[in-house]
Amino acid sequence: MAVLGVSHIAIGVTDIDRALIFYRDALGLTVDADYEQSFPADMGPELHGGRAIQRRQVWLRSSASQSSALALDQLYTPAPADKRSDIYDLGIHHVAFWVADVDAVIQQALQLGFPAIVPHTASTKDYGEAIVGQIKSVFFRDPDGNLVQCDQRVAEGDV
Image 1 (tube, rainbow, N blue to C red):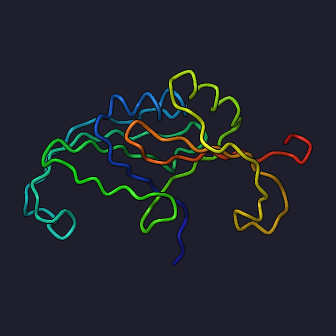
Image 2: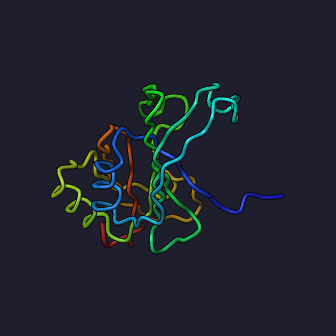
């Protein structure tokens, strides 16, 4: 038995419409589904603490990967707890996407009001890879403050 890849990453947000400006418009992900759900308190209490849940969920994918997805969740009731981690804290502290052109993503994000954080170039060794190469990288905060990284593989002369 082996992991075949990432199925999806789910991110809680306070306003999906606002979050879509970042994930759809700045990063270029495509919305595949958008719906609301209700779960009774007794459905999976070990997963959500026995709370009755009402939420909106939007699924996004890149045109390059139809197998991996990003799911945005907006909790209507009960009110969500704020448990975001700072980078390197316990739990998931950021998500990263491969992009074709990190400079274009930076420009699009800036036009939409999302400042670039620590744009830099790193060795592929910093990503745990044996093959030596370079990766251009940048961080952003989505409208809810979640940390998102975009990475682009580059040739040695392109940095």
